[in-house]
Length: 559
View 1 (cartoon, rainbow, N blue to C red):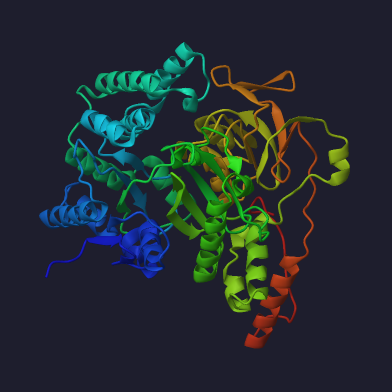
View 2: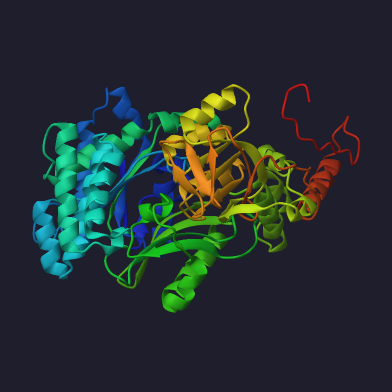
């Protein structure tokens, strides 16, 4: 019997499970686990990290065994869905997503709506009676496939989209109708052909293998390598690839997409936290293209879906015994879960969640101590703006408190400049309209991050929290001129190199260099350190004085 490289999930049972992250990646393993738990997950299959490893060893080519297993599992998916890839009348559309054993938010590639082509647009429009949806799905696929698989510049597509919006006199994508989106597709096709030198592929099988190759290839893209180096991630085979039947948050006005956390990832409070957008696809939320609505407002907009989501949240947190980061889609009033993982969190949140989970009887004190890293403890020792100083400051802009803590630095407007300035010893604030995975190097060296768009679950917010970097997101009052390397706020222009201060705990932004003071420790941290002391004493280790603790924050080796 040949080695298994592809694992199916669907019909309330899966070949994988949560413990198989090394083989299925975090995404694939947790999709399998949720399927086995009976949580509504669109069916699909995961191509293993071992197949990725073999792909690189075979000079970026797939073995016949892997190809055969992919086709076999695609046939299973087509049978379960009652649709086939490439059927012009009622096509199966799939997503192709990456998933390493260790969570790397936004660092690798995703392609949605795969299977779309000219014939599929007509078939979907006829079947659904929703011509706008059909053209929207096609234009999104062309952009993603062009960007991810063929390396077409993202901004070239954006320019084509903006030209149609400008001609109609609208600002938002949702204000474009079917005829407008047909024009967008025409523009995208021209962009693709000019960049690639050939027309957009219409064969869905060609599309599928192109996307799988691109996701495997993204394992070794610059941003993924940089992220692994920053976070000291090594000894992994590669990324898995999950091929999953599409569900559509842009299907109708009763459809939507969102990201939620079972607890607040900034503070650790036991509060159901997240954001969503109606009539949108998941990338719209994470990429920060539109500023989403707070999850709590979904309770009023659709109480049935909100209750279902709360029930899923409780089940998953109890099952994994940790704070969960979940992605969901609502298609025509039906809820689907697309991902769950242990959520990235700040140091403050890590401590509170660990202590609360002990008090709630979910984990032991010994386990709680292992849940908080040295880097997260270090975050708690970084400076803040005192309440007394705050009273004297003028706020020039206010955004979302995406990642707590205060920061002071010189404004820079690109990740490359951030890295260059930091290398010279400058403390900098990275100011962006929104961040993308390509900005990871600049985000890593920044004292703080300020974005004009995006929400609490945008790329900037999630990565900043994981790094412990203060971040203010969705700051609409900040108008950025990227060419001039400046931003305007409260009627004044701030140029590259001007000092800016921000407080990610309340979303406030200030001009100039604000005085910071040392953070105060207490509360849950003292509880956790007390448990650590008790456990250490009971171990009766020699040479360690009872009750002895050192807490410090050193910025330089000589400190």
